[in-house]
Image (cartoon, rainbow, N blue to C red; front, top):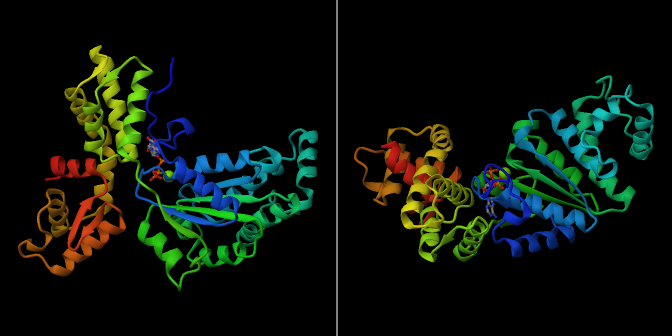
Length: 375
Ligand SMILES: Nc1ncnc2c1ncn2[C@@H]1O[C@H](COP(=O)(O)OP(=O)(O)OP(=O)(O)O)[C@@H](O)[C@H]1O
Ligand SMILES: [Mg+2]
């Protein structure tokens, strides 16, 4: 059985990363030189896919790599353990190093080997007794990348995904603490990813914030239509499906080239063709695939709308942006509330500014969903 034709739902493997080669090379180069980088971008734009590919390439170049997804964590201790495990995996090849370390009852030989591999890292953390305080464990974890780089004479690159969640996980003091460790580490570079653009920019560009000027801030470039067209046509060809440039163009025209949405439309289009026993992509099939994709994405969009928690005026504003009408002529609306809604939608990267007083949806399919379902 061949695998899914179009990958959806998580980070994609190297061969399915459309375009981005130059950007990936640039990231690998910067990180190789020890420059830390912060990448921000709206939801499902391909941040994690990019970062994983960058780490993969760095590993091939001989770097130690470690990645921690803050979205999955919920305590200081969990953060410390995740970082320690990710760092030590470079030496041991074992994902859950701390569990293995704790589990001394397992094969004595295995534990002994692990002890030898880790002995110079003073890993006598009293983990099995749980006696180490969370704070001390976190200090140890944040210090570890630097220690590892020095001991093993290896450059290290650490990825923190969903970095804006660090304060939820470990409290607001975490950024200051992290910076105090990270800034003194030689041969360690950090890659920070975040989906809350406003918050990430504040963290890294506001003079008062702990990470001010610690990393270069880069937006994620969009994927050009031509790169999508080439990829989509090629993918369908592998299954004996032919297409016209117009039909393929229609896909990215409708999705705006948004990575996740484009993949979902292609995937639904593919299944629609299979069900109908067709092997030519027509405009009608593109439309069918698109409609089905909208249904597939509905739960995600509903969640997003719930999360936005808009007031009556807020909904009017969203609707006006979707229809492209003026937001300032809503009857009986308080101008402050309109402004607050705009700021809120910008912070959530639902919309982006086009010009003075003019905004558009970041995700054309979400716009379509709002128009079709929300009103
Ligand atoms: N460069 C790319 N080429 C093709 N498809 C992509 C690319 N990047 C992302 N995608 C599509 O978008 C989906 C989401 O990718 P990924 O998880 O990397 O994004 P993200 O920005 O980290 O998302 P989240 O906001 O959920 O963290 C993938 O499953 C894939 O379908
Ligand atoms: Mg991600």
